[in-house]
Image (cartoon, rainbow, N blue to C red; front, side):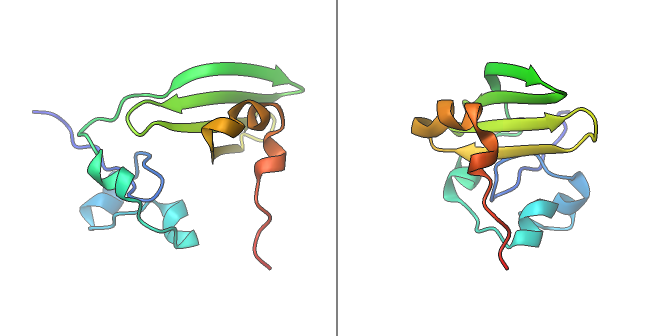
Amino acid sequence: MSATTFVCASCCRPMAESLGRLGSVRCHDCLETDAPVRESCVTGVRETPSLPRELDHRENDGIDVTLLWYEDSNRVAVRVVDSETGEELELEVAAGDARDAFQHPYAYILPAAA
């Protein structure tokens, strides 16, 4: 018997099992931002999504930056982890911007709506 993995229909990442059992199609973050459902996240869902492939990684002053490719959804993302605070951020970027976003991830963070 295989375990069911619930996947967010907005960001395509695994989400809390409790949300899926309650019938939510979006993870906590996507619910808070009212992110739209993306067809690519819904149609390509497999029971267990594959892990992203690490394309590049660098570390400086306790900040880890990793360039990732999600083969299942053909998404490219940059993950930034601050080892001092434990904060983690993952930004989906266009494939053509991947190298620049890897080098300058903070330039790709959208400012919060005022």
